Amino acid sequence: MKRWGTLLLVVVALVVVVAGVWGAKMYMTVQGFKAMGIQKQTISTIKAGEQPWRQTLTAIGSLRAVRGADLSNEVAGIVEDIHFQSGQEVKAGTLLVQLRAADDIAKLASLKASAELAQTIAERDRQQLDAQAISQASYDTSAANLKTAKAQLAEQQALVDKKSIRAPFAGQLGIRAVDPGQYVAPGAKIVTLQQLDPIYVDFTLPQQALAQIAVGQVVSARSDTYPDLEFKGEISAIDPKVDTDTRNVQVRATLKNPKRQLLPGMYANVTINIGEPQNYLTLPQTAITFNPYGETVFVITTADQLKAEQAERARKMGSEEGDAAAAANGMPQPTGDMPVAKQVFVTVGPTRGDQIAILKGLKAGDEVVTSGQLKLKTGTAVTIDNKVQPLNEADPRPTEE
Image: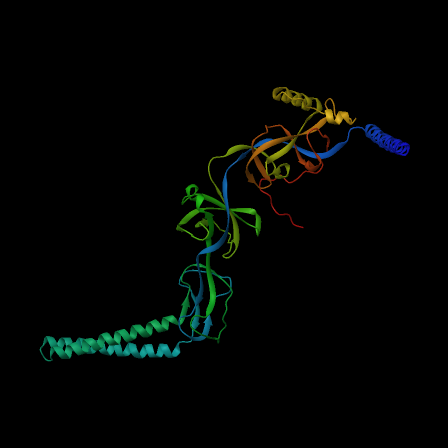
């Protein structure tokens, strides 16, 4: 028994020694924190302010010429003459390419002579029929021969005309794809012809947008080729059918393009303004912390004001709140007008560029943390450094490296 009593005393003594050492370390740690003072986290902030927003629909569209075609020949032949320069502006009906047609023209002359002879015979037979010198059957034969000759002449004239390729409409020519002396098969591309002003932009919108758009509605388009230019136009057509695979509807707008800067095949970012402008309280999107239980921001207040709010909330809830736990640990707490962070739940609305609208939870003039939120909790003392701010552009543009 004495042995067990001695062993118990040794264990108790060890526990006391360990507890004393741990307590001494904790005391030194607390004293060290006290000596360091209140820990502050460096953040950046912005004042929440109202901005006029107008709801928009956005889409990415493809540009297409109002009139555009790759010109080709209908019949085979040898290129005899080229009457245009690459990139030239031409009018409707301008002769572009002449195919070799000497033999066709010679045959046309022969058929023309035959038609003239048939015309003469038919007129003479008509006179003889009136004088009852020939039968009706003889006159009918000469009249039929005249019609046949005229049909053969018209057919040959059409063939000769096909050897002359002309511009079907006014526009700008592209780069020619043939040379003099080259044999071209039917359907071979000769040159592209595009009418560039105005120009179409085709895009799609979800079916939910159908109630917000109409023919004649104003649209604007931008291209990354000309990031500082905005091209105005209006909706010219809405497809009467919704795609069953995507539930999108195709829309076509007509844009003004007087300087021919937009070309068919380019893409453009299309914006349609809908509704009336509204004032929204806005923040940079980086200020919002998105959580499964809701969106939050940190606002800047003072230590005294935060304590007063916590005390009032505790009184209403009939509980005791505060910084008792921190005080029990001997940690120094912010006091007075020292800036501290306070987490606030907000209701967010639409986004525009780098900005997001706040529908509930804040008021104009509130100072909101824009970076450094991961280091914060309610009551954390902060140091504000706004030398560097996150992006906050309503219409951000890419910057050149």
